Length: 348
Image (tube, rainbow, N blue to C red; front, top):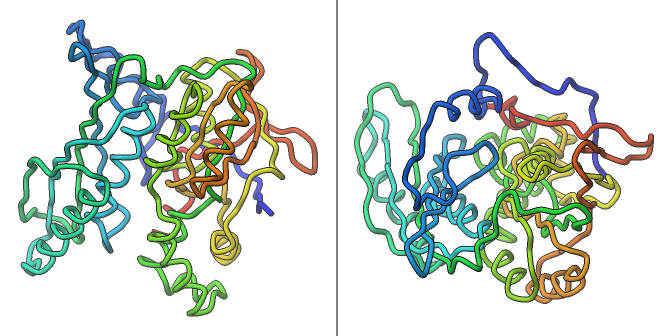
């Protein structure tokens, strides 16, 4: 059962910036000054678009860049996974990876070796080629940072556009909430979980979520697209499922109706959110792929996902523009909150 806390919408228009992605209003302002004149750029910089699409003739090149900053444990593995996820959400196959690895002063050579191992292992797992990048020891850091850059490929007809959702589409979710956030905090802030009442066994179980079920959506995205038309896909990262739903709906200029009781929450995620007083809807939740599917293909997609070991739970539907994004809970409908600052940022 979801734990909800009353909180403001967290829309800041002035003052200093907290630990978070850039607020949407500021990002939009910056991107409005960027001019893309190359006609081959089919999808360029846009709020709510997580990757670019470039026309290469018979195929398209899909390009993505994303850093890993919260995690230190298994940071190289994280970097490959989160970048591959956004490639897959556009219906493309992740193919080539570059990594910029920044290490703090005084780092042991073993740290560089471990991060490199994590990157190569994750690339091998996904069939991705490591093709380059950059490494350095950087002034002012207290922990490593890895910025990943993934390239993928797809046929033009297979691209799933960020703004492709349509009114009446069913919203499906492939995994319970808070998998990534729970695993991350169990590895980076275990004492905070124990102080909140979680046992050592609970913390260990939470940490294992990084491997099983894991945070990759690549296979689920490919499975869904192989059996029916999928109008849009989104990997809910910072800001959790709630923000992911907002981003998917806004990219298409639509509203959405969400059934709170239908949203699955992992057992470990539930324990973590209770221990730390976090709202599961705002916890980073990579691995839980969000799909907008036309009603005609819903059954096929849900069956295929189930056969592939994913949930494919119906959590709501897309509405016409102007309907807003609403969460229907036990107390009736209310606006779905948006978390521009991820809930786990409070712990860090």
